[in-house]
Amino acid sequence: MILNFKSTPLITRIERNFDANEINTSFQTNIPTRLIEFWNFFEEVTFENGINIYGFNIAVERNGLYGVSVYAPDYILIGDDGGGQGVFLKKNSDQLNVFYQDLGALSSPLYSLDIDLFSWLENNPVIDEKNVPSVELDLIDEVKVYVVRVPNDANKFIMDIRKCFNLKLSIKDIREKLNGLPFLVIQDIKLMKYGKTIEILNQKYNCLEVYNSKNVILISPVKN
Image 1 (tube, rainbow, N blue to C red):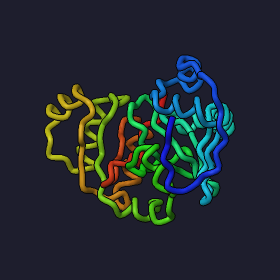
Image 2 (cartoon, rainbow, N blue to C red):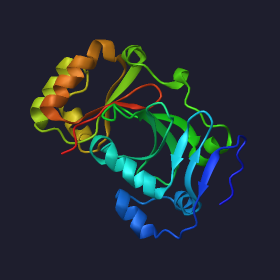
Image 3 (spheres, rainbow, N blue to C red):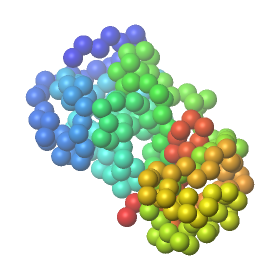
């Protein structure tokens, strides 16, 4: 694999023919071919600003160390920024979009840099503080609320969401929409006003997912 780095990272090379099945089994997902190829050539790539991308063996060790499969089961940890933030890829995706989150807050939503991993690496990779969303911004951002799984008690749930969000949809309409998930319940509302309501609804029915204006998931149902 040839990567055209604009900067000159410290590279630890390796030549190994990793078996795709071995890698997929280790992470319980289908790893894209480009990442497997990277792992066949690189044991570790470290940039001057602290960005560090792991080889396969290190990735396996760090995912176990930070409990990624428990706290962020939809992602794999493939690096860090040298300052406590992890670099992640989303599982079961052919895309290698870069995500990041504090390694001590993996139960919180992960944020996307909206860039391909290798394009990012070749163009002076960085995670700036200005790119890290704050809780305060999420609270005043306008969000969308979806039903993404069948609620625990559909009849009571329908009554509650009509009341909580002052929905004009009829009971019949909502029941029909629950047969075709995901179902957009409401949009352009603020967590500052509705956050507690959504939390209570999810405690009772475990079915709501909330996205901010950048389509980052802020709240999800608990995985059973």
